[in-house]
Length: 176
Image: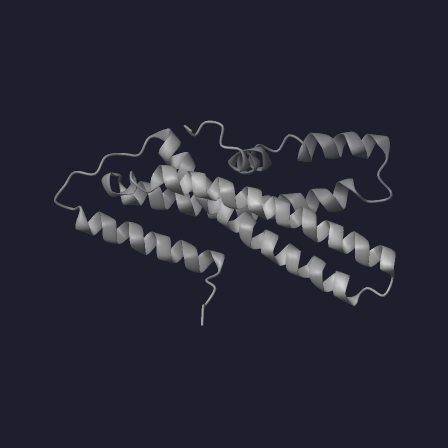
């Protein structure tokens, strides 16, 4: 029987792995990770969290499709599920690229700095979900006026946090 580990469980496993590597390499001097390596660890955590979210959304869409009695609604939910599956495949490809880049580097790098990047990625993803939900409520409300729409765009469209988290989906800085 396979047991699925949730996002925080995976983070704990990765942190223990990094600690074990750090202990095993204690005789060697670990080097400070580069900005790209830190960004990569940050993005690995962000993408893992996005994959978990994608799995939940796919399950919800599948459940909605199965319980819908209206054929047009059922078809729309099936279409949504297919789009989510495509998004999931893209995220899994990005995660594979990030992990492939980092795996050979991890033993030589300072594990506490890598762990810090992982924690920051987790925290930023959680915060980005709160910001995105707030923005959806504020910006998609039926009573949105032109003035409130501009304010909404200014506060939500230019969020550095949302931009930083979203950049993980397309790591153009990562060498091929």
